[in-house]
Length: 452
Ligand SMILES: NC(=O)c1ccc[n+]([C@@H]2O[C@H](COP(=O)([O-])OP(=O)(O)OC[C@H]3O[C@@H](n4cnc5c(N)ncnc54)[C@H](O)[C@@H]3O)[C@@H](O)[C@H]2O)c1
Ligand SMILES: O=P(O)(O)OC[C@@H](O)[C@@H](O)[C@H](O)[C@H](O)CO
Image 1 (cartoon, protein in one colour):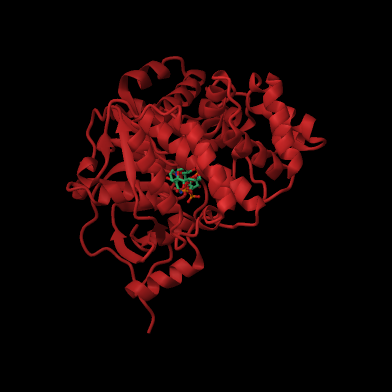
Image 2 (cartoon, rainbow, N blue to C red):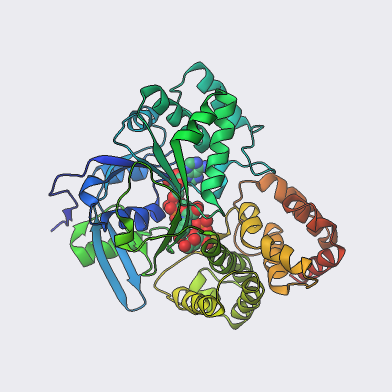
């Protein structure tokens, strides 16, 4: 007998939120918080993929519903999430503009990866990029053009909202970037200013950019996951999501036109998100990046395998000791987070691939590792844990461990070849020109790269 399909039995909530970056994390996190809020019946989400239609088609066939599998070390819990009421391919710009011009649509959330913000060396939009220039030209000839980049989709959508008089809206970035609200505001304002000098002022007065720290380890779905969901639930779900039990969402900023009661589902609203963000970006994401390069170089495929390796675990503790010195949080809170991380990562039933985490190191290491490295060097110390993470990444660019998949592959691969002493200097200069003049650091780094 074939399994029953997932479908909606009650009326879908009205669309009042739009999401860009329909993938696994959004479905394990923001969509789950929304579904678990007491006012879920008022807040439906229309979600867009980056470009492709595969996930949008699969979800449309299930009326947006999907199974969220919370995978603990000792078993699974399956629940059906129904806050996503429409799923669209990212290329469907007509529908994107349609939602953004509706006054009842109050929130846009984002999980588009670090690379999608298209920042230049000064942290603002890199307007020299071909894709940005192409979008800009298209927007100038048609305000509802089929633009491709995330800053252009946001700026064009907001411009259409202004033209429609649809009023204020809140944009919530849920990507792993420090101060992600300000980053989003900056790239949108930069693009808006190039399009129409009056648009940045309207955006500043009308659009609230909220900063968030998001945490829930959510790997890519496998064929085994799809089979296991059918066995456990008796329902045929083409697009389930597997996630860990731990979940955290800390937000800071205004929602002038309302939001779901996410706090009732466990989210926390604070005035300063920075300490939480650093704790997570340095300890979890920085630790992940270290394991992605150093662990895959030792032959491991998953986080759970790497963290079970005493060498990797020692390197991790060394990195955490260095990072912890610069966190503005009570020691016991940091210790508890470290303990929780080891427990989370040791859950071998979560198959989090090191190759997935290894992608885009050129964008991740500056955020996850370099702030600690700089602070340690300024204090006159040589932070071996941070240097090891960087050295393992450079070795990965030179062919060790997980395959290279990086938004800046041409530049970093070009710099990483040749003798370790010169290669390390060239690669570091791409990340931070000042650090690349630190001779003691370069010698330490080249020594570690040379050993691999
Ligand atoms: N997976 C996790 O454990 C996790 C946890 C915390 C935060 N995040 C954040 O969420 C992001 C997405 O993770 P995921 O697991 O959902 O990945 P995913 O691959 O399942 O989905 C990513 C989504 O972003 C879109 N996208 C990718 N590049 C884009 C681009 N350049 N422009 C527009 N859209 C683009 C994709 O098309 C897809 O819709 C991460 O990069 C990270 O910033 C993920
Ligand atoms: O999702 P990315 O590619 O930014 O980073 C990979 C992992 O470090 C990340 O997904 C973590 O699992 C996540 O941030 C945990 O909350």
